[in-house]
Amino acid sequence: MPLASTPRSYGGPARLFHWLTALLIVTAAALGLCATGLPTGSPEQVAAAVTAFSAHKTIGVAAFFVALARILWAVTQPRPAPLHPARRLETLAAETVHWALYGAMLVMPLSGWVKHAAQAGFAPIWGPFGQGLPFVPQSAALAQAAGAVHGLAAWVLGAAVALHVAGALKHALIDRDATLARMTHGLAAGSGAHRAGRAAPALALSIWAGVMGVAVLPGAATRPGTPTAPAPVASADIWQVQEGRLSFTVRQMGAEVTGSFADWQAQIDYTPETRAGQVTVDIALASLGLGAVTAQALGPEFLDAASHPTARFSAAIGETDGQLAATGRLELRGATMPVTLPFTLEMVDGTARMTGTTTLDRRDFGIGAGYGDEATVGFDVRVDVALTATRSSTTNN
Image 1 (cartoon, rainbow, N blue to C red):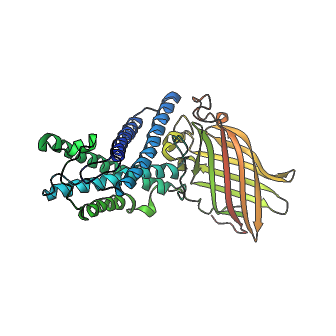
Image 2: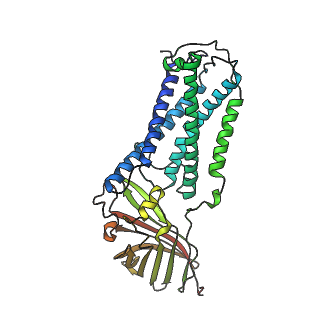
Image 3: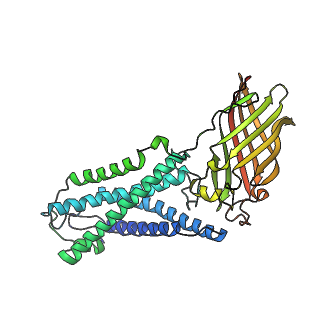
């Protein structure tokens, strides 16, 4: 089997890359369509859906690397010339489809990977790749934009594959030439006299520019669901929150996933001189951001936000063995449990920076009662709080 391609035939590596890429793309697409339609009404059904999505994502990542290797190999090799170069319009269309297909083979899996990395993980990617990507922050807006690109790229990929297959069948059944045979078993055919122009790459690039424009530009700065820091709270006490983050981390199918609440308010009365005070935090559960499983997490099986829209943490602030802590009760999903939140506090010129962490057991609040073991959803939920507040001597209502 010859390794190198020639102006009349495809070498072995080029043909192997072609068929392996096709297999991975078809498999990933089928798994994605199948997983989207799976029910999630029971722990067993959720586990099956997670497995299907994990397989879809993992094969998609593999398809990205195989496609990248294929393209890098292709640019180092001569490309077999069309068998009918005099059919200029047909040749231009075929080459445009090829370039659009190359783009889809990279853009579609990469955008899906960026979407996965930018939001709380649902269905982890198997293997050594991990859940994150360098330079990809956790961002609902970025995840939404990447998801839009992923969806549009799927349409481009589907159209390009359909046209590619239709062209191959035309050559095999109507023209009865060796175009398809050159890719199936490396048959040498044609004169090899052809020079590719720049029109096809330019047309394909314009297609992808349109995809990016439609997916990313409109409303990118004001996409709904983008988590924001809580608005400054003018309390009747002496501290006013300026910015902060309230997040939690739980293990799902063995991988850590992190969510956060965008809408919460803290009423703080704290005297630094005595290191004592009171705090009340109200959390709008509907402001939860947990990536692809946000709706499920807000449903009756978990937070049940429709019946219990607000959680409240009321606590006394004090010092125990040199460690500051807020000790009180958390009202969540109709249950009230004692909670202690140890925290550190830095005070500079009337500005306080606080960070704290505590761990809850979801079973104490009846969350995920149908998930009786930790195979799908872990019992422990780590809660992390960070905020900046300024001292205020006035009351604003």
